[in-house]
Length: 107
Image 1 (cartoon, rainbow, N blue to C red):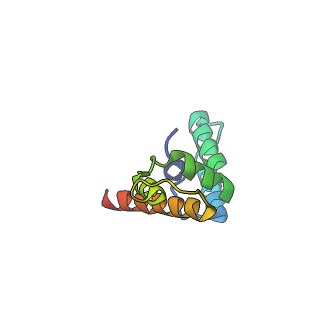
Image 2: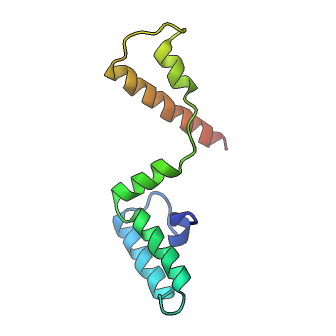
């Protein structure tokens, strides 16, 4: 399946109402009687973006894997393992996300 945002003509910042409006517009343009394959593609795109939860799932499962080396370095700090705490986990997650942002900004 193609990118659902591209299928519906949206940007990733689109909210629930924008997704719904784009879906309805695309269904008007491509009714199931005239183009059943296109309609199935539009319906699948809408299903993956119809709510905030669905958009988050789409985002999480379609992003390239981030480089976790910075998070690993933060956790082991110069190679010395220590007790794992919630703060460590949060710091690892932030480091991984920042690393991903840096990678995507360079592209």
